[in-house]
Figure 1: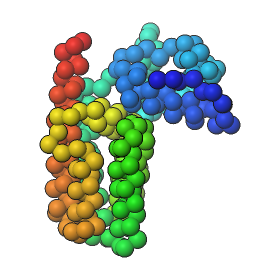
Figure 2 (figure 1 turned 45 degrees about the horizontal axis):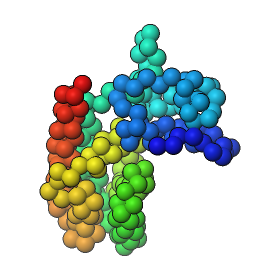
Figure 3 (figure 1 turned 135 degrees about the vertical axis):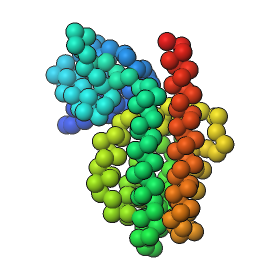
Length: 225
C-alpha cells in the first residue's frame, strides 16, 4: 500500500485522515501497531502536527487508542468488542429495514436499486474502500427512508469499527452466501416483496453469518499471537 500523498490538496488533514483510516481498516496497520508521529509523517509526506490532529479524530472513531507511556496504537479488535458491534448492528438494522419497508415510496425503491447496483459494481473491483463506501451509501438510504436519523448517527460513530470488521470478513470465502448476495436479499425484501419481516430475517442471517466469520478470524489471530 502506497501511503504517500503525491498532490497535497487544500484539505490535507482530511486526505491524510482517509489514508490512515483506510490503512487501519484494511489491516495494513494491524491491532496494536504503534503509530509514531515522525515516521507516519515521513510515510505520508505531512507534518507531525497534521498526524497528531488525525490521530485525535481516529481515536474518537475507536480506531486508535492512546496508551500511558506508549502513545497511540491501532486499537485492539477482539471478539468482545466485535460481538457488541454486531449486537448493536442487529438491533438498529432490523428496526431500520422494517420501517424502511413500511415507509417505502417509488423514489426510495429506485434509490435502493441504484445503491445496490453500485454495491455490486464495487464488489467486482475488489477495492475494499470502494466496497465500504458503497455499502455505507446503501445503508444510509435505508436508515434515511426509515426516518431513523438518530440511529444513523450512532452507526456513523461506530462506522470505523464496523468498516474494520467488514473489511476483515469480506476476505473470507467461508460463506454460505456472499456478503453482496446477503445485502441483495435485504434490499429485495424491502422493495420487491415489501415484507418487513422478511427484511428483518435477511438482516439476521447476514449479521449472524458475518459475526461467525469474524469470531473465527479473531480467534485465529489471537492464537497466532
